[in-house]
Image 1 (cartoon, rainbow, N blue to C red):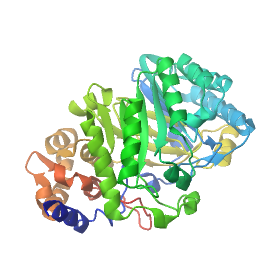
Image 2: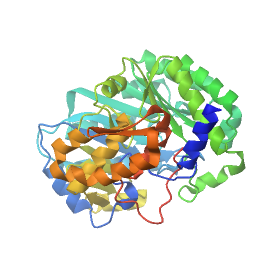
Image 3: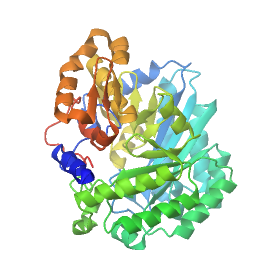
Length: 454
Protein backbone atom coordinates (compact mmCIF):
# COMPACT_ATOMS: atom_id res chain seq x y z
CA UNK A 1 0.00 0.00 0.00
CA UNK A 2 2.79 2.42 0.90
CA UNK A 3 4.57 1.63 -2.36
CA UNK A 4 1.44 2.29 -4.41
CA UNK A 5 0.86 5.59 -2.60
CA UNK A 6 4.42 6.56 -3.53
CA UNK A 7 3.81 5.68 -7.20
CA UNK A 8 0.58 7.66 -7.23
CA UNK A 9 2.36 10.66 -5.79
CA UNK A 10 5.20 10.45 -8.33
CA UNK A 11 2.59 10.24 -11.07
CA UNK A 12 0.75 13.29 -9.73
CA UNK A 13 4.02 15.22 -9.78
CA UNK A 14 4.49 14.45 -13.46
CA UNK A 15 6.79 11.42 -13.62
CA UNK A 16 4.80 9.71 -16.37
CA UNK A 17 3.53 12.79 -18.20
CA UNK A 18 6.43 15.25 -18.24
CA UNK A 19 8.79 15.53 -21.18
CA UNK A 20 11.97 17.26 -20.11
CA UNK A 21 15.64 17.39 -21.18
CA UNK A 22 18.22 14.85 -20.06
CA UNK A 23 20.54 17.78 -19.31
CA UNK A 24 23.76 16.51 -20.82
CA UNK A 25 24.28 20.21 -21.42
CA UNK A 26 22.73 23.49 -20.35
CA UNK A 27 21.32 25.15 -22.30
CA UNK A 28 20.24 22.13 -24.32
CA UNK A 29 20.94 21.80 -28.06
CA UNK A 30 17.49 22.97 -29.29
CA UNK A 31 18.39 26.41 -27.89
CA UNK A 32 21.50 26.75 -30.07
CA UNK A 33 21.27 29.48 -32.72
CA UNK A 34 22.99 29.96 -36.12
CA UNK A 35 24.29 33.36 -34.99
CA UNK A 36 27.04 31.45 -33.15
CA UNK A 37 29.23 29.44 -35.51
CA UNK A 38 32.66 29.00 -37.04
CA UNK A 39 33.93 32.48 -36.21
CA UNK A 40 33.16 32.04 -32.51
CA UNK A 41 34.56 28.51 -32.69
CA UNK A 42 37.90 29.67 -34.09
CA UNK A 43 38.24 32.52 -31.60
CA UNK A 44 37.48 30.26 -28.64
CA UNK A 45 39.92 27.57 -29.79
CA UNK A 46 42.69 30.12 -30.32
CA UNK A 47 42.21 31.48 -26.81
CA UNK A 48 42.57 28.15 -25.01
CA UNK A 49 45.22 27.89 -22.30
CA UNK A 50 47.78 25.35 -23.59
CA UNK A 51 48.62 24.39 -20.01
CA UNK A 52 45.11 22.95 -19.49
CA UNK A 53 44.39 19.61 -21.25
CA UNK A 54 41.25 19.28 -23.36
CA UNK A 55 38.89 16.46 -24.17
CA UNK A 56 38.34 15.48 -27.80
CA UNK A 57 35.24 13.84 -29.26
CA UNK A 58 35.11 12.41 -32.78
CA UNK A 59 31.78 11.50 -34.34
CA UNK A 60 31.71 8.61 -36.81
CA UNK A 61 28.15 8.70 -38.19
CA UNK A 62 28.22 5.52 -40.28
CA UNK A 63 26.50 2.20 -39.51
CA UNK A 64 26.09 -0.97 -41.55
CA UNK A 65 22.69 -1.38 -39.91
CA UNK A 66 20.45 1.38 -38.58
CA UNK A 67 18.96 0.24 -35.27
CA UNK A 68 15.35 1.35 -35.09
CA UNK A 69 15.47 2.56 -31.48
CA UNK A 70 18.44 4.90 -32.04
CA UNK A 71 17.91 8.66 -32.25
CA UNK A 72 21.58 9.54 -32.85
CA UNK A 73 22.86 11.28 -35.98
CA UNK A 74 23.75 8.27 -38.15
CA UNK A 75 23.58 7.06 -41.74
CA UNK A 76 23.73 3.63 -43.28
CA UNK A 77 26.41 2.34 -45.64
CA UNK A 78 27.25 -1.02 -47.13
CA UNK A 79 30.70 -0.03 -48.38
CA UNK A 80 33.76 1.59 -46.86
CA UNK A 81 34.09 4.20 -49.59
CA UNK A 82 32.09 6.96 -47.83
CA UNK A 83 33.76 6.07 -44.53
CA UNK A 84 37.24 6.49 -45.95
CA UNK A 85 36.22 9.76 -47.59
CA UNK A 86 34.86 10.98 -44.24
CA UNK A 87 38.15 10.18 -42.51
CA UNK A 88 39.82 12.38 -45.08
CA UNK A 89 37.44 15.20 -44.15
CA UNK A 90 38.24 14.72 -40.47
CA UNK A 91 41.92 15.06 -41.36
CA UNK A 92 41.11 18.31 -43.14
CA UNK A 93 39.20 19.53 -40.06
CA UNK A 94 42.20 18.68 -37.89
CA UNK A 95 44.46 20.64 -40.25
CA UNK A 96 42.15 23.66 -39.91
CA UNK A 97 42.25 23.32 -36.14
CA UNK A 98 46.04 23.12 -36.15
CA UNK A 99 46.03 26.65 -37.62
CA UNK A 100 44.13 28.12 -34.66
CA UNK A 101 44.95 25.94 -31.63
CA UNK A 102 47.68 27.24 -29.31
CA UNK A 103 51.01 25.45 -29.49
CA UNK A 104 51.58 22.95 -26.72
CA UNK A 105 47.93 22.02 -26.16
CA UNK A 106 47.50 18.46 -24.88
CA UNK A 107 44.66 15.96 -24.96
CA UNK A 108 43.48 14.57 -21.61
CA UNK A 109 40.62 12.49 -23.02
CA UNK A 110 39.51 11.22 -26.41
CA UNK A 111 36.22 9.52 -27.18
CA UNK A 112 35.02 8.05 -30.48
CA UNK A 113 31.25 7.81 -30.82
CA UNK A 114 28.67 7.39 -33.47
CA UNK A 115 27.24 5.77 -35.35
CA UNK A 116 29.63 2.86 -35.24
CA UNK A 117 33.29 3.77 -34.75
CA UNK A 118 34.20 0.10 -35.09
CA UNK A 119 33.07 0.18 -38.70
CA UNK A 120 36.62 1.47 -39.31
CA UNK A 121 39.11 -1.20 -40.43
CA UNK A 122 42.52 -1.25 -38.67
CA UNK A 123 44.20 0.90 -41.33
CA UNK A 124 41.65 3.70 -40.83
CA UNK A 125 41.78 3.33 -37.04
CA UNK A 126 45.53 3.96 -37.11
CA UNK A 127 45.20 6.75 -39.65
CA UNK A 128 42.58 8.66 -37.66
CA UNK A 129 44.16 8.18 -34.25
CA UNK A 130 47.56 9.32 -35.47
CA UNK A 131 46.05 12.33 -37.23
CA UNK A 132 44.47 13.49 -33.97
CA UNK A 133 47.64 12.92 -31.95
CA UNK A 134 49.69 14.89 -34.47
CA UNK A 135 47.54 17.98 -33.82
CA UNK A 136 46.70 17.50 -30.12
CA UNK A 137 49.23 15.14 -28.53
CA UNK A 138 48.02 13.03 -25.59
CA UNK A 139 48.87 13.97 -22.01
CA UNK A 140 50.80 11.38 -20.02
CA UNK A 141 47.71 10.10 -18.18
CA UNK A 142 45.23 10.41 -21.03
CA UNK A 143 42.15 8.24 -21.48
CA UNK A 144 40.93 6.95 -24.85
CA UNK A 145 37.45 5.41 -24.98
CA UNK A 146 35.52 4.00 -27.92
CA UNK A 147 31.90 2.98 -28.44
CA UNK A 148 31.94 -0.60 -29.68
CA UNK A 149 29.31 -2.62 -31.54
CA UNK A 150 30.20 -6.27 -30.86
CA UNK A 151 28.74 -7.29 -34.22
CA UNK A 152 31.06 -4.88 -36.02
CA UNK A 153 34.40 -5.60 -34.38
CA UNK A 154 37.05 -8.29 -34.44
CA UNK A 155 40.38 -8.91 -32.73
CA UNK A 156 42.32 -7.03 -35.41
CA UNK A 157 40.26 -3.86 -34.86
CA UNK A 158 40.53 -4.21 -31.08
CA UNK A 159 44.29 -4.68 -31.31
CA UNK A 160 44.56 -1.59 -33.53
CA UNK A 161 42.56 0.50 -31.05
CA UNK A 162 44.58 -0.82 -28.11
CA UNK A 163 47.87 -0.07 -29.86
CA UNK A 164 46.68 3.53 -30.34
CA UNK A 165 45.98 3.82 -26.62
CA UNK A 166 42.36 2.79 -26.11
CA UNK A 167 42.00 1.97 -22.42
CA UNK A 168 38.21 2.08 -22.01
CA UNK A 169 35.52 0.48 -24.14
CA UNK A 170 31.79 1.13 -24.11
CA UNK A 171 29.82 -1.85 -25.38
CA UNK A 172 26.35 -1.39 -26.82
CA UNK A 173 24.02 -4.13 -25.59
CA UNK A 174 20.53 -2.65 -24.99
CA UNK A 175 18.86 -6.04 -24.31
CA UNK A 176 19.80 -9.68 -24.89
CA UNK A 177 16.30 -11.06 -25.44
CA UNK A 178 15.81 -12.13 -29.11
CA UNK A 179 12.21 -10.87 -29.23
CA UNK A 180 13.21 -7.44 -27.96
CA UNK A 181 16.22 -7.32 -30.29
CA UNK A 182 14.03 -8.14 -33.28
CA UNK A 183 11.56 -5.43 -32.31
CA UNK A 184 14.28 -2.74 -32.32
CA UNK A 185 16.21 -3.92 -35.38
CA UNK A 186 19.34 -4.93 -33.48
CA UNK A 187 20.15 -8.64 -33.51
CA UNK A 188 23.13 -9.24 -31.23
CA UNK A 189 23.52 -12.75 -29.77
CA UNK A 190 25.09 -13.10 -26.35
CA UNK A 191 27.94 -15.30 -27.59
CA UNK A 192 29.09 -12.58 -30.02
CA UNK A 193 29.07 -10.01 -27.20
CA UNK A 194 30.94 -12.40 -24.90
CA UNK A 195 33.60 -13.00 -27.57
CA UNK A 196 34.00 -9.22 -27.95
CA UNK A 197 34.46 -8.80 -24.19
CA UNK A 198 37.00 -11.64 -24.11
CA UNK A 199 38.97 -10.02 -26.93
CA UNK A 200 38.92 -6.65 -25.16
CA UNK A 201 40.19 -8.17 -21.93
CA UNK A 202 42.87 -10.13 -23.80
CA UNK A 203 44.02 -6.88 -25.44
CA UNK A 204 44.52 -5.34 -22.00
CA UNK A 205 41.41 -3.15 -21.91
CA UNK A 206 40.71 -3.08 -18.20
CA UNK A 207 37.73 -0.72 -18.10
CA UNK A 208 34.47 -1.81 -19.73
CA UNK A 209 31.13 -0.03 -19.80
CA UNK A 210 27.89 -1.73 -20.85
CA UNK A 211 24.97 0.28 -22.27
CA UNK A 212 21.47 -1.05 -21.55
CA UNK A 213 18.06 0.38 -22.35
CA UNK A 214 14.79 -0.11 -20.47
CA UNK A 215 11.34 0.65 -21.85
CA UNK A 216 11.91 -1.22 -25.13
CA UNK A 217 9.10 -3.12 -26.89
CA UNK A 218 8.20 -6.49 -25.36
CA UNK A 219 10.45 -5.96 -22.32
CA UNK A 220 9.04 -7.36 -19.11
CA UNK A 221 10.49 -8.13 -15.68
CA UNK A 222 11.56 -11.65 -16.64
CA UNK A 223 13.31 -10.57 -19.84
CA UNK A 224 15.14 -7.63 -18.29
CA UNK A 225 16.17 -9.76 -15.33
CA UNK A 226 17.70 -12.30 -17.69
CA UNK A 227 19.53 -9.53 -19.57
CA UNK A 228 20.95 -8.13 -16.32
CA UNK A 229 22.13 -11.62 -15.30
CA UNK A 230 23.95 -12.02 -18.61
CA UNK A 231 25.48 -8.56 -18.33
CA UNK A 232 26.78 -9.39 -14.87
CA UNK A 233 28.42 -12.51 -16.34
CA UNK A 234 30.40 -10.17 -18.61
CA UNK A 235 31.75 -8.37 -15.49
CA UNK A 236 31.65 -4.75 -16.70
CA UNK A 237 33.10 -2.00 -14.53
CA UNK A 238 30.32 0.45 -15.37
CA UNK A 239 26.76 0.19 -16.61
CA UNK A 240 24.55 2.85 -18.18
CA UNK A 241 20.83 2.06 -17.89
CA UNK A 242 19.05 4.51 -20.17
CA UNK A 243 15.32 4.93 -20.56
CA UNK A 244 14.23 4.43 -24.16
CA UNK A 245 13.27 7.78 -25.67
CA UNK A 246 10.48 7.11 -28.17
CA UNK A 247 10.66 10.24 -30.33
CA UNK A 248 9.56 9.20 -33.84
CA UNK A 249 8.95 12.88 -34.71
CA UNK A 250 12.74 13.32 -34.36
CA UNK A 251 14.04 9.90 -35.45
CA UNK A 252 11.94 8.66 -38.36
CA UNK A 253 13.31 5.12 -38.10
CA UNK A 254 11.54 4.75 -34.75
CA UNK A 255 8.29 4.57 -36.72
CA UNK A 256 9.34 0.98 -37.48
CA UNK A 257 8.83 0.16 -33.79
CA UNK A 258 5.39 -1.07 -32.80
CA UNK A 259 4.49 1.43 -30.10
CA UNK A 260 1.67 -0.83 -28.87
CA UNK A 261 4.42 -3.23 -27.70
CA UNK A 262 6.11 -0.58 -25.54
CA UNK A 263 5.77 -1.06 -21.78
CA UNK A 264 3.13 1.06 -20.08
CA UNK A 265 4.21 3.85 -17.73
CA UNK A 266 4.10 1.83 -14.52
CA UNK A 267 5.68 -1.23 -16.17
CA UNK A 268 8.50 0.95 -17.49
CA UNK A 269 9.11 2.27 -13.98
CA UNK A 270 9.25 -1.26 -12.58
CA UNK A 271 11.73 -2.33 -15.28
CA UNK A 272 14.13 0.45 -14.27
CA UNK A 273 13.72 -0.20 -10.55
CA UNK A 274 14.28 -3.95 -10.84
CA UNK A 275 17.38 -3.61 -13.03
CA UNK A 276 18.81 -0.95 -10.69
CA UNK A 277 18.20 -3.16 -7.66
CA UNK A 278 20.03 -6.05 -9.33
CA UNK A 279 23.09 -3.93 -10.06
CA UNK A 280 23.18 -2.53 -6.53
CA UNK A 281 22.89 -6.05 -5.11
CA UNK A 282 25.82 -7.10 -7.32
CA UNK A 283 28.08 -4.50 -5.69
CA UNK A 284 27.65 -1.53 -8.04
CA UNK A 285 27.28 1.98 -6.68
CA UNK A 286 24.36 3.93 -8.14
CA UNK A 287 25.70 6.99 -9.98
CA UNK A 288 23.28 9.82 -10.71
CA UNK A 289 19.98 8.92 -12.33
CA UNK A 290 21.02 6.08 -14.65
CA UNK A 291 24.63 4.89 -14.20
CA UNK A 292 26.25 2.24 -12.02
CA UNK A 293 29.91 1.62 -11.27
CA UNK A 294 31.99 -0.74 -9.17
CA UNK A 295 33.04 0.85 -5.90
CA UNK A 296 36.71 1.25 -6.88
CA UNK A 297 35.94 2.53 -10.41
CA UNK A 298 36.93 6.12 -11.19
CA UNK A 299 33.30 7.12 -11.75
CA UNK A 300 32.27 5.88 -8.31
CA UNK A 301 35.23 7.62 -6.69
CA UNK A 302 34.33 10.86 -8.45
CA UNK A 303 30.76 10.58 -7.17
CA UNK A 304 31.93 10.03 -3.58
CA UNK A 305 34.38 12.92 -3.78
CA UNK A 306 32.00 15.44 -5.37
CA UNK A 307 33.87 15.43 -8.71
CA UNK A 308 31.17 13.83 -10.85
CA UNK A 309 30.31 15.78 -13.97
CA UNK A 310 27.83 15.47 -16.82
CA UNK A 311 28.51 15.89 -20.54
CA UNK A 312 27.20 14.67 -23.87
CA UNK A 313 28.23 11.08 -23.11
CA UNK A 314 26.40 11.11 -19.76
CA UNK A 315 28.13 10.96 -16.38
CA UNK A 316 31.90 11.34 -16.36
CA UNK A 317 34.91 11.85 -14.13
CA UNK A 318 36.53 13.93 -16.89
CA UNK A 319 38.08 17.05 -15.35
CA UNK A 320 38.94 18.77 -18.65
CA UNK A 321 36.96 22.03 -18.83
CA UNK A 322 36.98 22.10 -22.65
CA UNK A 323 35.55 19.50 -25.02
CA UNK A 324 36.47 19.82 -28.69
CA UNK A 325 34.00 18.06 -30.96
CA UNK A 326 34.97 16.99 -34.46
CA UNK A 327 32.92 15.48 -37.23
CA UNK A 328 29.35 15.99 -38.39
CA UNK A 329 26.94 17.16 -35.64
CA UNK A 330 29.66 17.16 -32.94
CA UNK A 331 29.26 19.72 -30.16
CA UNK A 332 32.19 21.55 -28.59
CA UNK A 333 31.97 22.84 -25.03
CA UNK A 334 34.25 25.87 -25.01
CA UNK A 335 35.03 28.45 -22.29
CA UNK A 336 32.50 30.89 -23.76
CA UNK A 337 29.75 28.44 -24.61
CA UNK A 338 28.77 25.73 -27.10
CA UNK A 339 29.34 25.36 -30.84
CA UNK A 340 27.86 22.52 -32.89
CA UNK A 341 29.23 21.42 -36.24
CA UNK A 342 26.86 21.20 -39.19
CA UNK A 343 24.61 18.24 -38.40
CA UNK A 344 24.18 16.67 -41.84
CA UNK A 345 27.31 14.93 -43.10
CA UNK A 346 27.09 16.58 -46.52
CA UNK A 347 26.81 20.05 -44.97
CA UNK A 348 29.72 19.31 -42.64
CA UNK A 349 31.90 18.13 -45.53
CA UNK A 350 30.98 21.19 -47.61
CA UNK A 351 32.09 23.57 -44.85
CA UNK A 352 35.40 21.78 -44.27
CA UNK A 353 36.18 21.54 -47.98
CA UNK A 354 35.53 25.29 -48.23
CA UNK A 355 38.43 25.75 -45.84
CA UNK A 356 36.46 26.80 -42.76
CA UNK A 357 35.61 25.20 -39.46
CA UNK A 358 32.27 23.43 -39.41
CA UNK A 359 30.57 25.28 -36.54
CA UNK A 360 27.00 26.01 -37.67
CA UNK A 361 25.15 26.99 -34.51
CA UNK A 362 25.76 27.44 -30.82
CA UNK A 363 25.20 29.47 -27.69
CA UNK A 364 27.29 32.06 -25.87
CA UNK A 365 27.00 31.59 -22.11
CA UNK A 366 25.93 34.46 -19.87
CA UNK A 367 26.70 34.49 -16.14
CA UNK A 368 23.10 33.47 -15.52
CA UNK A 369 23.58 30.51 -17.88
CA UNK A 370 26.72 29.46 -16.03
CA UNK A 371 24.93 29.68 -12.70
CA UNK A 372 21.97 27.61 -13.87
CA UNK A 373 24.22 25.11 -15.67
CA UNK A 374 26.14 24.45 -12.46
CA UNK A 375 22.97 24.26 -10.36
CA UNK A 376 21.39 21.74 -12.76
CA UNK A 377 24.59 19.70 -12.90
CA UNK A 378 24.64 19.53 -9.09
CA UNK A 379 21.11 18.15 -9.04
CA UNK A 380 21.79 15.66 -11.83
CA UNK A 381 25.06 14.44 -10.30
CA UNK A 382 24.56 14.74 -6.56
CA UNK A 383 20.79 15.26 -6.08
CA UNK A 384 21.88 18.28 -4.05
CA UNK A 385 22.15 21.93 -4.98
CA UNK A 386 24.81 23.48 -2.76
CA UNK A 387 23.73 27.08 -2.20
CA UNK A 388 27.00 27.98 -0.46
CA UNK A 389 29.09 26.81 -3.44
CA UNK A 390 26.93 28.79 -5.84
CA UNK A 391 27.21 31.86 -3.62
CA UNK A 392 30.99 31.52 -3.50
CA UNK A 393 31.21 31.14 -7.30
CA UNK A 394 28.56 33.60 -8.46
CA UNK A 395 28.07 36.02 -5.60
CA UNK A 396 24.75 37.89 -5.35
CA UNK A 397 23.61 36.38 -8.68
CA UNK A 398 23.08 33.06 -6.89
CA UNK A 399 20.19 34.57 -4.92
CA UNK A 400 18.17 34.86 -8.14
CA UNK A 401 17.43 31.16 -7.77
CA UNK A 402 15.94 31.54 -4.29
CA UNK A 403 12.34 32.00 -5.36
CA UNK A 404 12.52 28.98 -7.67
CA UNK A 405 13.98 26.83 -4.89
CA UNK A 406 11.17 27.90 -2.57
CA UNK A 407 8.59 26.96 -5.19
CA UNK A 408 10.26 23.58 -5.65
CA UNK A 409 10.10 22.93 -1.91
CA UNK A 410 6.42 23.83 -1.93
CA UNK A 411 5.61 21.73 -4.98
CA UNK A 412 7.51 18.57 -4.04
CA UNK A 413 6.97 18.70 -0.29
CA UNK A 414 8.90 16.15 1.72
CA UNK A 415 10.45 14.67 -1.43
CA UNK A 416 12.93 17.54 -1.29
CA UNK A 417 14.62 19.28 1.63
CA UNK A 418 15.42 22.99 1.50
CA UNK A 419 17.44 24.96 4.03
CA UNK A 420 19.93 27.83 3.97
CA UNK A 421 22.71 25.50 2.79
CA UNK A 422 21.13 23.36 0.10
CA UNK A 423 18.19 21.95 -1.76
CA UNK A 424 18.36 18.15 -1.70
CA UNK A 425 16.24 15.60 -3.54
CA UNK A 426 15.54 12.79 -1.10
CA UNK A 427 15.94 9.17 -2.28
CA UNK A 428 12.21 8.58 -2.64
CA UNK A 429 11.97 11.58 -4.97
CA UNK A 430 14.99 10.98 -7.19
CA UNK A 431 12.92 9.59 -10.04
CA UNK A 432 11.77 13.22 -10.44
CA UNK A 433 15.29 14.68 -10.76
CA UNK A 434 14.97 15.79 -14.38
CA UNK A 435 11.66 17.47 -13.59
CA UNK A 436 13.18 19.27 -10.60
CA UNK A 437 16.15 20.37 -12.72
CA UNK A 438 13.86 21.67 -15.46
CA UNK A 439 12.43 24.23 -13.02
CA UNK A 440 15.82 25.96 -13.15
CA UNK A 441 15.89 26.02 -16.96
CA UNK A 442 15.46 29.54 -18.32
CA UNK A 443 15.68 28.37 -21.96
CA UNK A 444 12.85 25.84 -22.40
CA UNK A 445 11.91 26.57 -26.04
CA UNK A 446 8.28 26.42 -27.09
CA UNK A 447 7.31 23.60 -29.40
CA UNK A 448 10.23 21.30 -28.54
CA UNK A 449 9.16 17.83 -27.41
CA UNK A 450 11.74 16.20 -25.17
CA UNK A 451 11.87 12.58 -24.04
CA UNK A 452 9.74 11.41 -21.13
CA UNK A 453 10.99 11.97 -17.59
CA UNK A 454 10.50 8.38 -16.43
